[in-house]
Image (cartoon, rainbow over all chains, first blue to last red; front, side, top):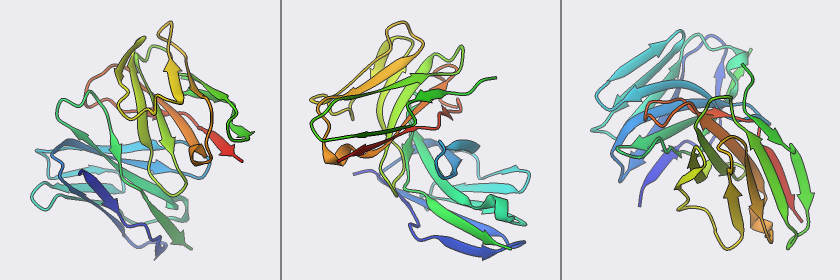
Length: 113
Length: 115
């Protein structure tokens, strides 16, 4: 069966360091992969989208990589700040999926000052 | 631009009772989704509407859950009767069209507690 795995343990890092979050998937051939941020009591907010034929995407301090051979995406936040503390969700969309997303369980990031 | 609106924000009911949630998507967004997010997990799609038609409801427990979007704008999700395992946050999301690269915009969710 299709599986999307994110580290369920919280990631604790020091302010200013680079945070790296991992999203692994099995039995899936996604056409798109998206990353969302979710704060407590709020809905997810879209951050970045990367297509299957793209290796890397950047937006300000954010960088996403997509390796379809390893079936893995890495999400990096450089120069992290306490305001970056949140849960980060990866979501996959298959080909001809009608814009339907399948979400991973999310990883909680805590950035300490 | 106003975001996706949902109400109520919180609801506590006893098992076997009924409950309904309401969602108003971003103006002009044709596609609307309902997700269930259990504590500690990612959102799980329940149903997708394109205008007032159902695109996918394969993960909707149809024996107790129902949803409608009669005029192609706002939508309601109903649970009848509720079970303990239905305790979760119910998220509504919308996109402008149904293109695969469209960003989904989420509402704040309704937190349901079933006692």
